Image (tube, rainbow, N blue to C red; front, top):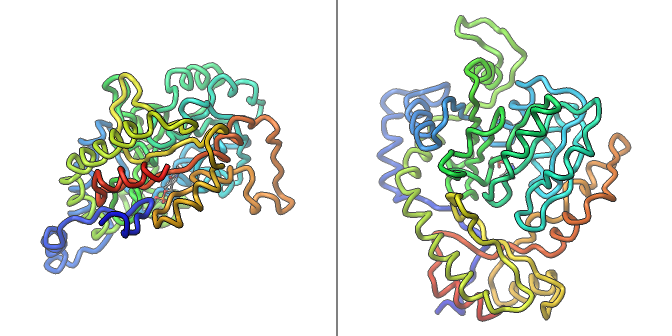
Length: 368
Ligand SMILES: *Cc1c(COP(=O)(O)O)cnc(C)c1O
């Protein structure tokens, strides 16, 4: 009886236990636990192939990957980014000693509004870090145009966008670097993990060093790096999960289509549709609770929790509203973030995971 079950906003996918055990059993033979072992090498090749990119670096998590992407490009001064994202995006900028400059977002995709980027560019701006929010691609053409015009670097936070393609171009081919997160709660994961893709092989080698204490191929320390390497157990989980990825996308797509079908007639609930020319991964199902809906977003969130299914206000609050950014060292003008503010106060992610059945979606929607 779905009525009596508790449904979480997400629940990690786990492959069959035996499959993972078989994958890691070699580790008991070769005692290679980390530092670019055989699992790491295999996983890196598979990812390169799956993502359709030239260069892939694997990391222990997405946040450190993004942190090192910024370091590798030697950015200075100000970076234009979106406030409608997870804390990791703007933290990575601030941890590098840079100033995030928050740009408003689009109503239709929740991504950075390309028409508002240029007015934020100053002589101190060195990069744009947009986020492909919920796996919907940013306007990559326009971002490239602006970046070229002002000689800015572009790093995409593609944490949600694993496997996305735009007009048959895999998403990791845009910008200077893209970061994908393989955290357990992402639809494809390696327990924890991160990926950077880049076109430049020089940049690839620099990232290899930065994630391994700055060691170069000769064993001398060429850069001041940190430790952000992916280990063999993570890589093994990634290898196994990659075998199940298409099945998982198919399950999610069915659930998403059901949600859309059942919510179509609900006044005051808005959701995102597929975008023409885009290959989606169906990793989230966010809705906007419009003002004409019978409850506010927060009331709906509470009401659904009483029914035992748990939605998430994601992303709320906006990054520019984090208390941690107001300790005297930072101050952000966000009078210009009207759309982002509006969306973050109305957004709610409904439950979506491979553990769910169509009946769960029907039950949830009957409560909306
Ligand atoms: C998950 C996430 C990250 C961080 O990735 P981790 O692998 O958890 O460190 C960064 N940005 C966004 C938008 C995310 O959702």
